[in-house]
Length: 190
Image 1: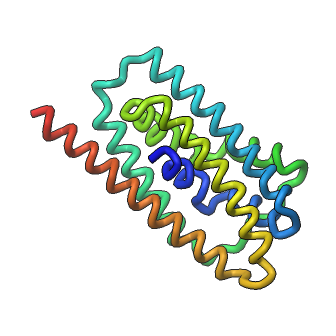
Image 2: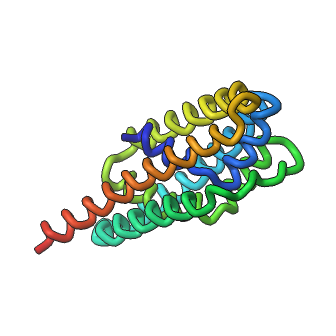
């Protein structure tokens, strides 16, 4: 589950993915460095939510966190589906790592994911799932950079469309999962 969550965090088209895709068309490593920067931002955000989760007893708010996570997943899935016809973002200046890190730390979607879904995943499944979440992110970064580099010349827009479909389906799946966790928590509390 952690690996799938990592892919759902790293996979959706957004500013980081747009830069990663753009740089990976020129070099696999240029794309990977963007992903490493964004993964570092995810690590920083994870530390923040782990400290927040340890300092504050928020277990009584679990159902609300699951509901917020579910809404956030559905929101991302819908936003990605609606933006399928938008072009790639412009290439950011500076190194790929710095671009990925900066965008990851200021991206409201990434911050929102960690404070909703990330926090509830940690509370429900613990540290081991978080480790595998980063394995999923790492796997996705290597996979997408390699695929984009090798396939961009031949398939072009078809690659972006396949990424969009996968992202929408995986985010929808986790939206349903978190809805189920919220509802089952509400039902058992009566």
